[in-house]
Picture 1: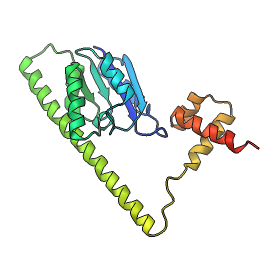
Picture 2 (picture 1 turned 90 degrees about the vertical axis):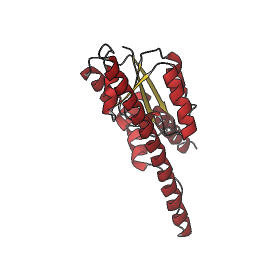
Picture 3 (picture 1 turned 135 degrees about the vertical axis):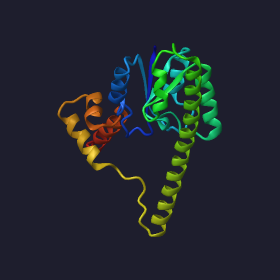
Length: 209
């Protein structure tokens, strides 16, 4: 069984590899190892994610698509989700999500009762659809609350735009100053390498005469 793990974070400041160890442990506990990982910092509301597209291109029938949760795979609008789901199904991929216990059956070789297997697959498919809809609704509600908060802050003259994470900048600068490389710094600071590079470059710019 070929297991392809997909790890995603929405922004460059977030650590997309955060759930990597958890997925590794889950695979081992089920008698398997992860054969390939696809990691990216892209919004789940976008369908044109390079690593997800590469995963679908690489996939073969019977492979497992392992994710931490359904919202890591999709926060897409209904039409876009249906297109992605159709692409997953057409490749014969089996979705296994840590937050969806009914999907764990896909980690086992399909050698048992065909009827039971088909029933479990149908139930799992229904729950995946439901959780994808919930993930999208959660995204829309958060966006709405954020917009309301910004409007309220603007009306009160308190809106200052996106703020810099001072603690993260300090931590990254300290690690770089101690001689850590880009990847090691990102790992210890729990952020992406892109964020480390931005902070490093910002620091260089601020020291120029």
